[in-house]
Image (cartoon, rainbow, N blue to C red; front, top):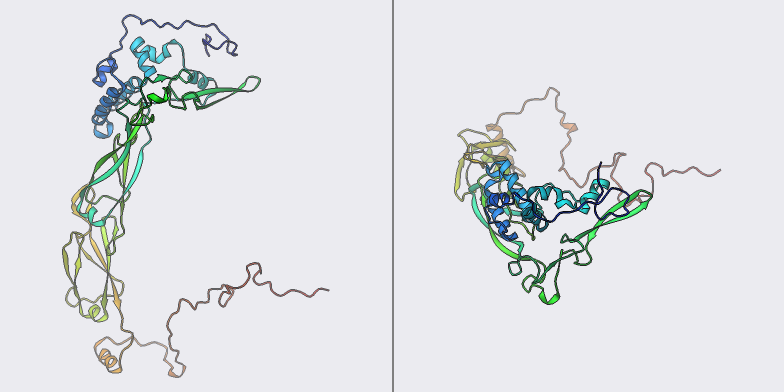
Length: 419
């Protein structure tokens, strides 16, 4: 697998000879291309590299129509130039030095190759994205608006340039990573690799005296910074739609700022229910209005009032729907089109009628269809009011006995006498 050994592994069961690690810079080394790609001068600081990358990344991101291959090269350049160790190797040996690790090799890479579980880098380090929910009204979604939201995120402290204090030095134990690798022998030829925070630098990667600790960030390297995020709430935006803001989450020295996601939550409306691009509402009318027609006004989402009327001679059935075309929600990404408004009618029936009213209705309304079986008035059964609290819900018949002990099995209450 490997033809040679590894320097510094004296007595480790891999064998092989030690190799010399040259620190002199080879001739004709290209160590400027990555700086030119980001648009910064050779030897630029980490902060300058970060700012240049952020500016170019927003413009060249594939989601914004940029070239994916160019964006990949930009992220690779940022990964190298924002990492002090890789930047030093690139400045001295070019890309070959970065790929070969300067001829030395990283302990975690070696462990990962033989045992697995080591740190793997597939791109530039980036902080985790943050998700925030924003509650809006149905009126907001109908009309669209610009929403200004206060957002607090961590930024690299400018007082110490993200070092945590003055006269900081890279921790020699973890080489500035803040993490150390440990190899434990489990048995003959069996090893276990684990990692944990470096005890010498408390996982910070740098060491400095307490008196040199930054007064602005108190040695944390980052500070809380508030920003007003502008959210362009579009007409007809759907529930749980996410707006992405690149680089607006937390950042850390040498690590790209994460992205911020704003998720839209639409408040429940007291009158309208949204289903896709359509709106639904209910309207209570009297029996007289259901039979003879009705007219009413309805306050709409834009603050206007709709003057609504049934057609002449139209009868409204209980729980039936009527539709007003193009009075629903705007189509998302196509606000010139709108859904429909559907109104469900609930008819308030009279609780009782006087005999003279009944006689009038019998003369006006269609007569009921006569039953094929002759009605016997001597066997008349009167209907009673439905009572949801007086139901026979027990499958064995009768009402449930809620007070019965749960330990008593149902249907097994009779016990045989002992012989």
